[in-house]
Amino acid sequence: MTWADLLLVGLAGVGAGFINTVVGSGTLITFPTLLALGVPPVVANVSNTIGLTPGSLAGAWAMRPELAGQRRRILRLGPLSLVGGIIGAILLLRLPAEAFVAIVPVLIGVGCVLVVLQPTLSKRVAARRARGGEPAAGPPGGSPLLGAGVLATGVYGGYFGAAQGVLLLGILGIGLDEPLPRVNALKNVLAMLVNGVAGVVFILVSRVDWPVAVVIAVGSVLGAQLGARVGRRLPPTVYRVFIVVVGVAAIVNLLR
Image (cartoon, rainbow, N blue to C red; front, top):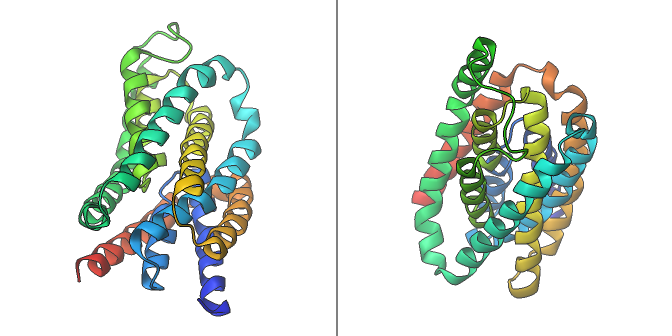
C-alpha cells in the first residue's frame, strides 16, 4: 500500500470517527475504502475494527458530560456488549472467508437501511417522550428485552459492525427514558466496548494489517474529537446520504 493509499485510509478514518461519534455507521466509509484499495475482506474488517477502537474511546471520553449518572447503566449493559463482541469476533474467525464475503453485502445493505430509517426512529422516540406515556422509573439498565437487544447488537458489531451505532441508538432510544444526547453518549461507550474486545480477539488470533489499523486509529481519534464538538450542528442528511452512497458502492464492489 502506497503513502497516497494510507493518506486516503487516514481521511476515511477521520470521517468514520466523526460519524461514529455523532450517529454511527463509520465502518461504511472505512471498510469500502479498504476493499477498493485491495485489502482482503476479512483482513480489512479485522484491521478496521482495531483501528476504530481508539476513535470510539475518544468519542466516549469527549461526551462524558452526557454520561453523568449513567454508571449503573453502563455496568449492567457493558458486560452484554463485551460478551456479544467476543461472540461476533469468534464467528468472524470461525466461519469461512467465503461466508463473510457472502454475508457482508447483506449486512452493508441492512446498515444502509438503518441509516435511512434512523431519523424516523428518532422522531418516534421523541414523540413518545413528548407524550409522557412512559414512566422514568425502572431498572437502571432498562428491561431484559433491552439487554437482549444490546447483546445481539454486540454480536453484530463483533462480526462486522456497520451501522452498529445506529442500531444501538434505535434500541437504547426506545428502551430508555433519556434524552437522545445521553442515549448517544451511552451508545458510544457500548460500541467502544464491542470494538475493543473484538479487537483484542483479532490481535491474538488473526492477521492484522497494522499500517492500515494505525492510520485508521489516528484518523478516527481526530474525527471523534471533531464530531463531539461540531457534529450536532451539521445537517444529518449530508453525511447520511454520503454513507448510503459509499455503502451501495461497497455492495457493487463485493458482488462483482
